[in-house]
Length: 467
Picture (cartoon, rainbow, N blue to C red):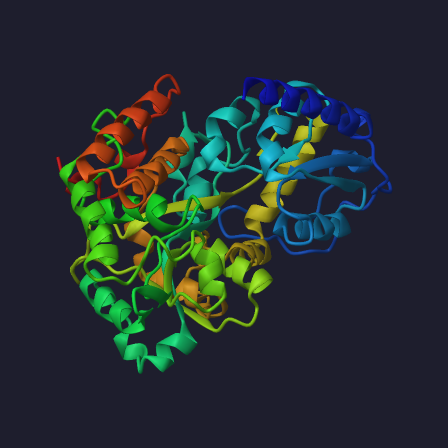
């Protein structure tokens, strides 16, 4: 592994040199000189405002590089660069797409120098890796909080380095065709887990001892799908936090996790609506019409559109253990604003700050972002927008928006180790107690020395959590 990592770093370094050589040294691009400060355009925004009637970089040509793992044809940021350039024709953008697997090696290497990208995509799971290279957003915290949900959790000494533009969480996707075949209607949409079990049993089919249709499938490798993502939501529903009171130690080994693991095990062994022998990719199984229900996040809608466009599906909110309001319905995560490279020139940073203000004040960007990632707008003025709420995922999230919790940019071990725990119980036949012991130890080992501290105390209903 060490040899491969060194080789990957060498290759990434060579790639960065090549990219930077043809990049934005000097900051000049192919844009035309802009002499027209008054564009005759209206100011955008309510609290975070953008007045387009000014010159950027004194009207002189400047090129900004933007790096992202999202294909530029699908990235709403890329669309905004084109709209922005129509207002400020002296500003051009060079968009560099880097594969997700390489992104977290290449970007930090590039940002260490003076010729790295002025703007770069952020995923808050990599907060510790990228934050040292980021300049704070040049917008007051009060303005950001007035317009956007969840800003407080991103503040450091009163400044935000990035914020969520849209909010993502888990929901239940169901196959409408299989639902109809089982004589189920909208009135059967479950609100509690007991109700989901009953529905899932009606949707499950067996041929002797072989499952041919899964009612509720949790098999899979995706970090945000199946047990690795679901256990967090189930624990939160019962008021169990992911971290202890210090915020630095994982809280995986506890009676709540044990209860919820047993509940999931019962789905397989007692209620028989799922099977470990029913493939390893629940997303593919759902797309192929072999699975009736899955727990997935917003990005799954994009997968279905791309790979399984003919599947007729619906979405409903993840059930709870009772119909009473829980401590939290689930964990959420956000798609973030780009980071601004603090090591770039003053001119580059000023232009990047101007672009960031443009997208945050721009409702069109937030709407496009919500549609692209099938995620709920963090912008408060759009949370009742009829077009947004016409999307099933948005309608499912809307009533729960205030009862979703963000634990912060958690280390990946909180999902990868939970996945191993699931495999130990369901595939390797370890006892739940044994799996919880080993997983707790692994999580503690992985998180030690990272400097991570949970943001769970920032949750509005934190005091309701179990002690």
